[in-house]
Length: 158
Image 1 (tube, rainbow, N blue to C red):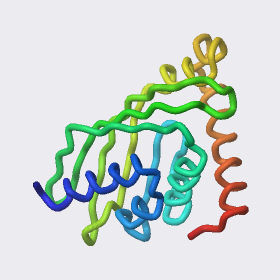
Image 2: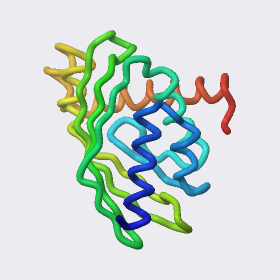
Image 3: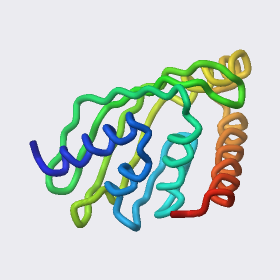
Image 4: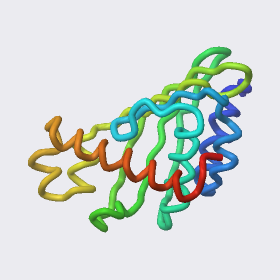
């Protein structure tokens, strides 16, 4: 297995164990992360997002597969099952991850998933009817950013 594929495997194994420190160790200090909800996170904020999800995801379960990597890029598929705390609704999210590597660590990490499918589960009827709309997506993104800022304010940006 390529060392960068092993790095991806290590990252998701740590996530499955809710080991945010282990995940952060896989990231380059200047990492850039983005997905459909948390956009354009860098460095400590990207690492802090995983820490927040690990600490708050009491019933979080993940599985990962199809890891591929070479010297510069990589990919994986992963799935998450958890309860969305804002609505107490169960979510099963299917994610496609893309990576770029620098200095033996993950430098760029982009997760892609269907926001509408996620919103339909997490937000219920509102998500089903309006999960496709920029209004709902922007509201969710704004709340997620506020939650992350508050979490980092309480727990520090390690």
